[in-house]
Amino acid sequence: QVQLVESGGGLVQPGGSLRLSCAASGSFLSSYNMGWYRRAPGKQRELVGTINRGASGSTNYADSVKGRFTISRDSAKSTVYLQMNSLKPEDTAVYYCNKHPATPWDNWGQGTQVTVSS
Image (cartoon, rainbow, N blue to C red; front, top):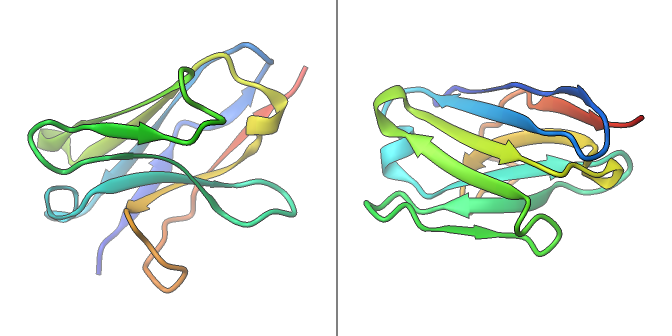
C-alpha cells in the first residue's frame, strides 16, 4: 500500500510563502498523475493543482491559486512539491497529495496544516 507523507506546512502571514513536500513510496509517482488537494475548515476537499507523470510534467491549477502556486516533482526523490506564494487567509487548510484523480477511498496521508494569518 502506498505511503504518502506531506510536510512543510506551518503558520505564515498573508503575502508569505511556503513550500510543501510530498514523499511517495515505491513507484507511485511514476505510475500516476499527481495532485495537491486541500480541505479548509467546514469544507470538502478540493483539488489545488495537478502535475502530469509524463516527461513534460505539465501542470494545471485551480483558478483560485493560478499564478501563485507552482507544482513540481523530483522523480529521483519520489517527491512532489507545492510552492505557495502570495498566500491569503483563504488558503488556510490541510494540504494533501495523492494521485489524480483520487477518491475518498484511496489511501491518503495525514496532510500538512497551512495557516495563513496575521
